[in-house]
Structure formats: C-alpha cells, structure tokens
Amino acid sequence: MKKILLFTFFCVIALTTFASHNRAGEITYKYISGYTYEITVTTYTKESSTLADKCSLTINFGDSQSAVFDRNNGPKSPSLCNGTIPTGEIIGLDIKKNIYTGRHTFPGPNTYIITMEDPNRNSKICNFSGSASDQISFFLRTELQINPFLPPNNSPTLLNPPIDNGCVGQCFEHNPGAFDADGDSLSYELVPCYGNGQPISVYQFPDGLTPQSINHLNGDIVWCAPTQICQYNIAILIKEWRLLQGKRYYVGSILRDMQ
Image (cartoon, rainbow, N blue to C red; front, side, top):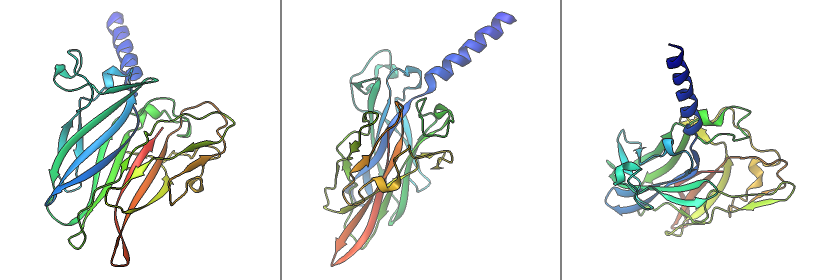
C-alpha cells in the first residue's frame, strides 16, 4: 500500500512539473468570402513541457459554435501527435512556436468574440502577485465585427514575436510590428492578461511598467527599467479603425499575450 501511495505521489509531482506550458500568443483572422473567415491561433510554449504539448486546440467562435484546429507548422515525429500532425517550430531558449489554422462560416452580421483557452501557463511568472502561474489558464480573445455596411475586414498580422528579453537596469523597448492589409488605423493599449475568460484578478503590471508605457498610436513599449531577473507577462490590446467617407468606425481587436 505504501508503495502504491508513493508511486501516486511521484506521478502527481511529475504531472505538475510538466504541465506548465504557455508563454505567449494571439488569434488573427483573414476574410475568405461571404461570412467565412480563416482563423489562426499562434502560441509560444515551453518546449520542454512535452506532456502538455497540444497537437490540436479547441477554438470558440463566439456564435455558440466551436471546432478543433490541428497544428500545421513544423516537422512530423513518430513520438508526437501519432506522427500525423506537425510538432511545431523550435526557436531556441526552451520556446516552441505553434500555429493552428482553420475556417469557419459565421451565421451573419454581428460582433463575435473568438477565444481559445488552455489550462496552464508556464511557471514562475513574477507579476501574478505571487500566485502559481502554472495554475492559471492561458486565454486569448479576438473581436471580429461583421458589419453589412462596411467592407469585410482582415485582422492585423503581428510581425514581431511576443517573446523578448530585457536587461536589468536598462530601458526595455518592444513593438509588436502590427501590419494591417486593409490600411486600417490601429491603436494600442496595455491591459491585464486574461485567464478563465476574464482579466486575471491577481495580475499586476511589472514595477516601472504602466498602461502609459505604450505609445497608443504606434505600439512602442518603453519600460525604464526592469529591476530584477524574472519572467513577466503583459497583454497588448490592438484595436482597428476603418476610415470611410470621412468617418472612423471601430472594426475589431486582437489581444496579444506576451512574455
């Protein structure tokens, strides 16, 4: 009996150790035709957390429908995803990039909040008020507006990855590199990260970083300066504005969770 209990204890420890997983990501979309859009979820995960690796993700479209998207980047391996689904792209420093893409036809004009939730972030994120970050879910959301009076919209694409490094005592600068194929204007905000479908209650902006640390017009983030070696997560809300006949219309947003 003692051996069984000891084995169970070590199994729990192993699962807890390897469950930490998500570092960063965002959801983007591209117009196809009618009410059909191609939706892409990009995540950056802890490469060494192989037991928490996601071959597929469930995407909720905000219209009471959901679907499972398979990962589609990287090589295939017989030891992961049954050898049938790509394993993602290893980019170094214990980071793996994963891309999941699929199409969905929405029922008609409306505002849709597209979401993805995965149970665990990676461990030892410092700005969650001392809470165990690997016990807090990783939640992404993007707003799609289908407006019958406006041309179809494509979300911005973010050209700079949401993983970056700074130095203690030196100003840190970052820009998401947002590009909008429709020529829409973009605005930027720093907001709390999300978990369990809402802003994380224990979230804190890192010392010296505030909502005013981002340029609302071009997305430049300037943090002067980090005070300790640590992992931090921030969230960038990018809103789109369409100019039509001299009037500016809000057409959607992306929430990027960045480490």
